[in-house]
Length: 142
Image (tube, rainbow, N blue to C red):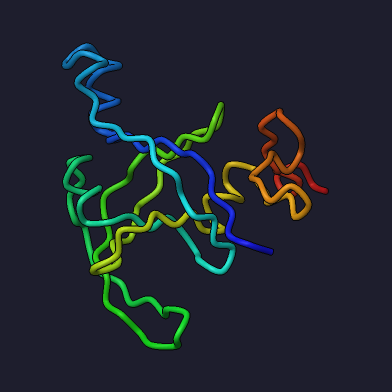
């Protein structure tokens, strides 16, 4: 399978909350729409330092990640950013890979948003159709 990209919007979670509560105008919410490379071998959301600055995200910690060539890299972790794909949204911390300008959409956000990659069309689609489906079998004794 080749590279799969999908359009996502990222918003500053705190700006969104301020706008919802009337402290700032909706147009003041820092956001950006980008083409993300879907990487089912990656765990979470990865953004560039430039994106972090434009979104106004603070660094809240560090983590070590293992990249494709097997080396370990220490990366910064941001406060949550709202990730939006069509009608689905959820907050995620993002990881900054030093020197990278690629946005990676990993498996945890894909799962949380009930998304999958269609191998035939090579596009991101809802795992259970257009309806955003939450899986909660354990909570209901299944």
